[in-house]
Image (tube, rainbow, N blue to C red; front, side, top):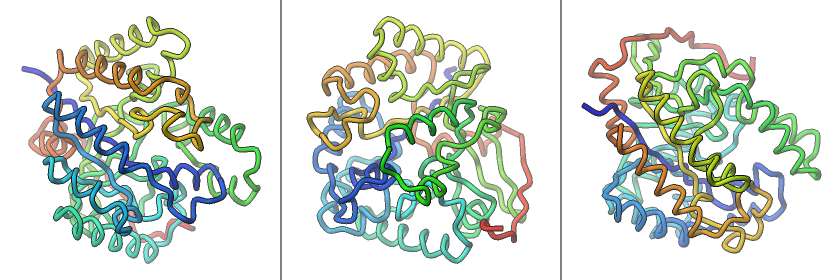
Length: 326
């Protein structure tokens, strides 16, 4: 019997990347959803895969994106909550700010897709006890905002290096972007939060067992810019190590895995954007083929259901009632 692997796509839009990077012009909410959504949906349909798309509420609130986002639900994919404003400093929000953020996102997503999200992923892997409290209160079934890796400070330093015009105030907000070194000590295996008597499944984004280096598609694509052989070997090693250690895989995709610098010139600074789209898609295809040999690939909601049914008995208590700012 194959182990469980879930596949999700964080539908970060062009403006959200520009905003996090501190670029001017994001306020007009420039979008590439009309390009990347059909491209990703075609890829998934050809491989008979149903996954989870984590959608930003602000995009769902804009009429220009309605058709693209509705297509996701029409193709039977699960819709998850990726916050409304896509600010990686969500852990700084007060409870009232979070309640407003969640309500606006849920209303916008349900209006367009007919789905009320039951799963959440914080932008930039942002999470706090207050976020978990709000998730539990609003009836969410799972969260998947934890990224267990030691190299988060390096990723953040690289991001700041590529953002020389960012002000000190903007850098301060982003000081926990991608997480902290201690996140590398987090478990790779799913567990359950107990929040004031309510259970909430946590499915960490999978990193390489033991070494905790990233294995999501964007990282493997980036490795391929140095050596295709290295990237392929790294991914096959990751799949085998997850199989041997019985680590249920949560594989993360991003829109830039389906876009090149020619598609989005404003985002050429991102690693791997010098590769043609066709080459990126081929890499993702090979990754999923290798993963499917040892794991059953499902969406995040179905993955959370397997955890609730007993694949993981680990529970963690979470203290609530303390504002995120304190």
